[in-house]
Length: 149
Image 1: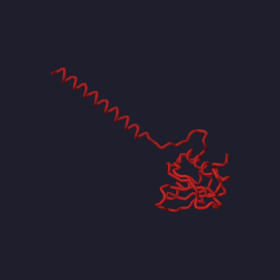
Image 2: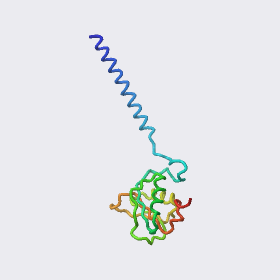
Image 3: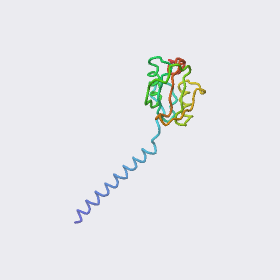
Image 4: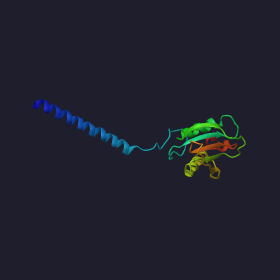
């Protein structure tokens, strides 16, 4: 009887110690968890202090391939590009960032990263868009940072 109670006591003690260690590791993981603050070295000099937002890239100049270049650049900078397509027209002269979520600072930060003038950041709220911001690539795309290599 004594031997069986002793085994149960040891087993219970080991289980409690294991739970304490597991919970300690979980707490440590929660406390030290922080957003990614840098992208892979050598990719670009992007501002990576932003909270990742979902964006879409729209071709407003009609030049094939500009959307791919912009999408690659934004993804390397940590943005979640969820859609790429064409804008409603191909006669956009100056590239712009459209804030769709009311977080104008995020849109301005994105514009700065791309080399888009701050006066070309506009707000256009829409429940139809599931993204926080849209990048519309204009005929000035060669002046933007993704093409400055």
